Length: 99
Image (cartoon, rainbow, N blue to C red; front, top):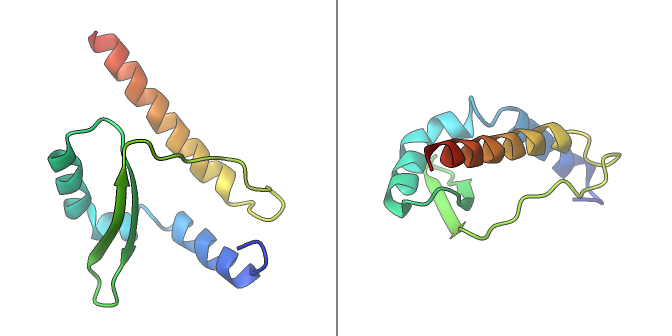
């Protein structure tokens, strides 16, 4: 990724359009996975097949998302990572209020 501007551009576009694109297309499958796993937190590694189906590689309850990439090369990542961090914090706060 660090050596390929075109791959970074592709990743930036995928991240920018995730909610309306990939997320919307696979919402039902992602919700079914979440329901089936029954976990409060899980990191999924997935892709879309050529015929548009969700292809799940990994579901990891210990997955790590990070904001450690150099911002000069990946200027699109901080906002996306912050969105994930904010959602995680909100989940923790909801659980803390119910306890």
